[in-house]
Amino acid sequence: MLNKQKPLPYFGIFSQWTYDIIKKNVDWEDMIMKKMYLANFNLTFGKDDEPLLNWIDEFVVPALNSGIKRELSNKAQIMFEDVRIEEIEKDNLVLTGVIIKDTIIDIYAQYSKEIGLIDTEQHHNSAPYSVFMIFLNNHRMVLIKRQSESPDLRLFTSTLMDILKDYRKLENQKRREQKEKLLPYAINGIKAIKTEKDITAALQSVKKIKKLTLKLLPRNNELGGWSGLIDGLDDQIRKASNSKTVKVVVSSPQSKSGVEKIIKATNGLMKTDLEVEYYSDSMGDEGAEYKRTGRIRDDQLSEAMDVEITDDLRDSPEAVYQCCKDIESINVTTTNIVDYQKYLEQRKR
Image (cartoon, rainbow, N blue to C red):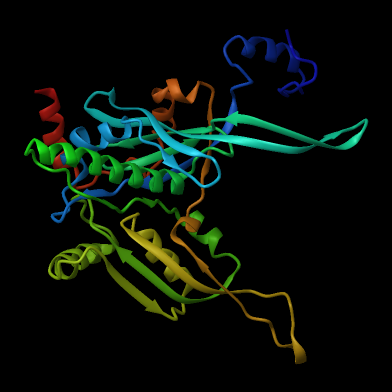
């Protein structure tokens, strides 16, 4: 029976008739726009920068399914659940799972039309969650939030690194006793993918860019980016100097559109940081503008996109997969495909 308290979805002059037909196949309660984040899941291991596929079965998946939780200061615990490798399409393996924020919501005031503001004290358990999918053939990743309070990409990354660190410590204690090969440390190079539209929107209120900093981290055997310049920085500077990171600093760039093109061309292979001066509407003495400066971090240059999924996120990796079919930055072919083909054959055997 239709809930009269909720507005009927509008389909034109035949609204009720159309609704009755579609209601049979679509649950409007679940048809909510959700936020999806895109990233390059660049995770490497040890002093030799070994790629993800070398350690995904022995280290990453067991760690995320170990039950280890990350404790936050606000009575919240972050944990992973049901992390597994699936083959949704032939020869296309993905790493899927759920990240949960187990917390308590404190309510100290409520509003009533009849009474107004009411003092109260209520404490409710809440577990907002997000689902993620990592495409193992190119290491591109999506994370979809179930609701606004669900973990975002930054919380996903920090929790992932903490749990890998804790699991490695516990597991290596056992391995030392049994004289087995130790697990390597993990190096975080996970970066949000930036589209030209997102970058332009982030810089819309910027008057002048004072400094652009690009930070290169170890990569998952992925080559390319910025007309081969990233490869040169990686091979000739980072590896030659045995360094984990290399920074490129561009001081006082005069072309904002040029900076936008550079950031897009990095293709998620470098972390970007901007020091900027914003346009100001306030005027000081004798008509001088007040200067307002700031910093735009890497994650602020990428926005989430809205996706529509009618199924339960936790139980429908196929629906998440279908959301990514037409996203160009997710379906790129990278040189990581050589490692992936070896890994695929290994799993088949």
